[in-house]
Image (cartoon, rainbow, N blue to C red):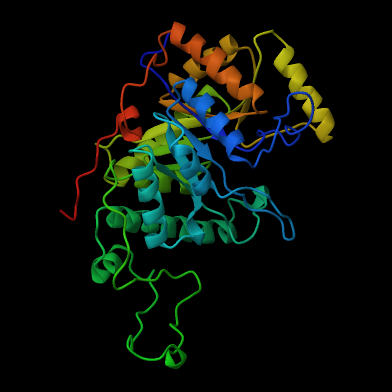
Length: 385
């Protein structure tokens, strides 16, 4: 099977891999998985495979009392920026914990440090864990809708800040009702200031903000992961790349069509918005070996590993067949989640990539110097110019 046009490929990096037992057994990564050498090796391996970008995860929503020991994604990306040359670096920043000025400056700074290879994976975390069975009830959908509306407003403000807009009225007009009231007595004593009166989640405007210079890409890449209509709508309105989680060709086709409809409704029909699919991958060149390895990890974990995304287990040729079949449904790329590191990452870069290259389905060299360039995305005009 040959691709109609080359695919885009990214990998989602976690410290040891996506299987809960990935840090155990003979394939577990050696050394300090929180150290710079470990993360540098992972990203350099992804770059060796000519991948478009890596995303760096941030702790997901956890039950009360649970702790997820994970490094700050943005600092990891910044640390490896000088140790790589071509691959995009897309750290996660949780949207409902972010202040626009802070996230705009941080991601723009990463874009400068990486010479135009930065992105922002926008992640939303609900205030409480959501029971999947309740996800389509009005009690869940209403606050979810507000959460995604707020996220869209945040991205709009961040994009304006990337363009150098810092006028308070302009920013407030971009996201009405999102900012805390200004201090009515800016020259007074802090002890005399009355509470601002907004909610704890309000954004603050700063009279003389410290902003990074306009980023080399204009706007660094905005990426989001989406599962259902509300995040599809948000991604179609706000993102450059929306990654989805279909489990069949028909699901992939229906999801792409829904996102294109939402994109047109948002007035972006003429803009390029990539639709990727997330896949968890367990790869081995010997038939059956990947399934055996996953079974051993499942046994160590004590139950069969399942995921929101489709789990692809097989040889590079088998997984390449799947990628090209789903591409026919309208996908332009994939974000692959290696089941165990470093094994499944090196299998992607050294076995799956050559298989796709042999079919004319993936690049044989980096053909652009920026992440937007790799993805065929134009540099947005400077609206503040």
